[in-house]
Image 1 (cartoon, rainbow, N blue to C red):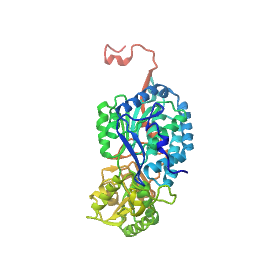
Image 2: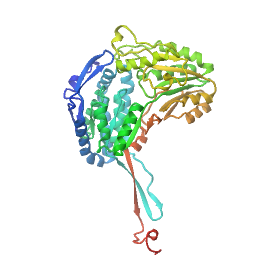
Image 3: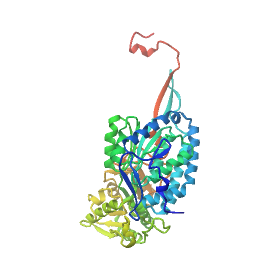
Image 4: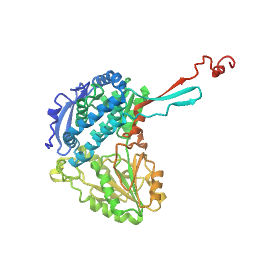
Length: 505
């Protein structure tokens, strides 16, 4: 494939997709999109302003009666065509994602793109299975029915680490349930969200059902969250920004779904398969260059395996190949920007004062110096309350600490503000069973770390937010449950009326 995806040609009309058409933004400010592997600008566009958000919301409002009133079968048919359109665009989607984000092409081709296509196929089926409590006479004189109805216009904000998958996670359950949506991708990663919207249009999704506004958070994002015609906000990003989103959303009392930061523990008990744990730790900590809220970031290893685990992880990290994201042999791409690379380096450099950098801890030289690369890094000897253990770094950095008893290992795993994901490694089903019960996280893997599937939910606890993406559980976020109760007696004066007026008839 031609890996130099030509965004300038593909999005010549602009980076806003409103009412079925690409257009330029109206903020008066220009955004450069930079290839993080080279530091070169590959596209420039005018950011969305508040007027663009208003236009997108209006388009979504106008499209809602028809789309919300469509039958589940009609919505399902459109989503099936959407999945097929995404499959046709797979090569472009992978190339755009790798160019925009610096992802190794094998990650884009084998994880991001097929996962998003599968999400579309899943929600095509799920659109026909909006379930509720069975109709019945829960009161002797009435029949009760539960309706699941779309909420209205959804305003969603997605992060820069998985632009395509986050577009899928936000858009698909919302439209499958009959809502219309305005999605704001991160302004530095708009490419695949725009391609996603174009594929939806080609599949027959009515204009206005899906709109994209590419703008800055403080302008377009805050205006979208606070918009009185937006009935729900779904946000994925940092916990700090999530708090701001929640503050704004309360002003109009709208539905709120937050998927926020993480600091996933990776708990290795002393009977674990050491080789499996070592390989799982390297893969789980380095996926997407560590820019993953579920990435393994804190490895707690029971003392009998600790030294061998540290040695094994360090040796395996040293074999990871940094390079051009479009080289199929590249394992690790750059971070999203030089700013993010420097932020990660700052965490590691500060940790040198109280911990040991076992391997990595530096940016590479040579040709890679032009990009935002950082070597896989393992840190040992940090205290549980140190910054490197407690704070979300969002880079290719794994911290490893020892523990003695099972009680201590589980307590350490829970000892951060976050609760998004975790994993437990043991051959003992009772040990892993206890870990899955007692580790406070939205997902706990056993003897693996990272895999996700469309049929199962994703979402956290504590400072990691609330609500679920993917799976049929996501309809809890994107539907309004309505109770309808029918009188079955045809009696004008009912017995309960006497509690308000008169006597028993």
